[in-house]
Amino acid sequence: MIVAFSMSPGTSDETGSVSAAVAEVVRIVRASGLPNETNSMFTNIEGEWDEVMAVVKQAVDAMTAISPRVSLVIKADIRPGYTGQLQAKVERVEKHLAE
Image 1: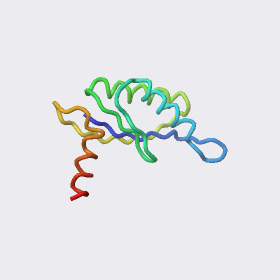
Image 2: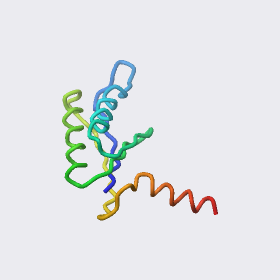
Image 3: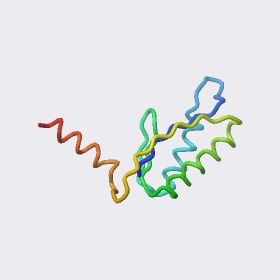
Image 4: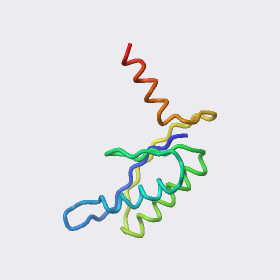
């Protein structure tokens, strides 16, 4: 499965930025060893349900240590038997665009 999630603390620093808190979440995702990527809006992580959700929970726990309120958005692509889809899905679209 691929899970795209976005998490933000309910509080920000004095400039209104939440990037330091988000960096803590990305650090947890990268340390998980699961395939992942981060863009300007979401962090995508690929793996089995239990391992992906365990990373998301660990990230939520870390964020709640920073802020008493956390916003979390999750979108999942659940397709048993498929791996390597973080890149493969994009490659299939690029192939159509090249036609």
